[in-house]
Length: 356
Ligand SMILES: Cc1cc2nc3c(=O)[nH]c(=O)nc-3n(C[C@H](O)[C@H](O)[C@H](O)COP(=O)(O)O)c2cc1C
Image (cartoon, rainbow, N blue to C red):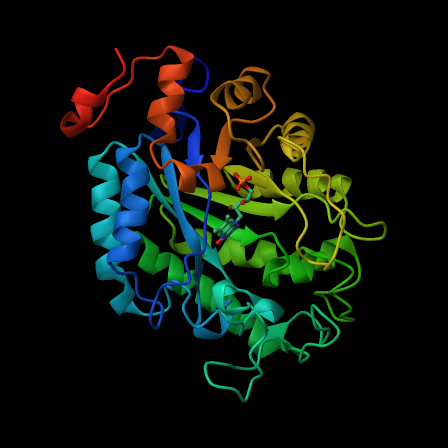
């Protein structure tokens, strides 16, 4: 068996292989509800053999949505359809996860295919966004409201309530979205966080919101389930959040009981030059794993079975996250097993198509 298809056991949960479907926004919900699009989209990765399937950024509150069409877990009524989806994923031998998210100042936008621009707070389908400070992502955008103490408490309570719903919906992994310039990342970065209270200034203060959200979630999230955090391991800009900050954070999160750090980069500052070469973010997963000994996930321009296998074999990461390659081929995992010479279980309905 190749290392990519070796199982990984974390606590009571076993992943049948190291292949993860990375969160991918579909912007296809009405008032946060999942629908048949999500069932087919996520379900096809389950028939396709992935070990862990994580939903798109799933908003913990209506104002935490990037667009009015984001998926949500901010109402009890959201649970039913998501439960159908997690049941299907489990029936295929995969583990269902959800990425809980708050977009902060990146909220109230159009869907990308209609331009992706900010919708003014007074516009149709728009609302006032919130952030760590009243600094917009792009100078020409409407500034967000800096969260006051009550606002911060609401964000924490929203994450906790969404985690309770995630249990009822059958998810076994929560990934907190602390990357890509969304709310948690807006607190982490000294570029977007100019607060003078205990949530701003020093590294200890800027990570406070994330640590408090984790505390809230852990109060309700069953100990046998898993908690991942996605971070932007670097901002790629001098003076911003650094890889050393990420290592320091990882050490703290490990102590706090976080199971894995999913290592992405960037997204909090516009127009940053990022060296987009194959596997360009793997080095961050490797460094964080080595220097904090927390489990890590590698993501970003990983498209080949052998490439992914080498990442696991060389102990650069414990899981490999795939996004766009999964959209090109939802059955990527079955093909990867064939390419690596592994005989994995196919859905019986598909067995006649197995490469011999
Ligand atoms: C359509 C699409 C939607 C995405 N939505 C999310 C998201 O909801 N949350 C997130 O953390 N990353 C999101 N991403 C980023 C991916 O999870 C991944 O980190 C990135 O695409 C790099 O991996 P890749 O080279 O395998 O595509 C999205 C990417 C794509 C292509």
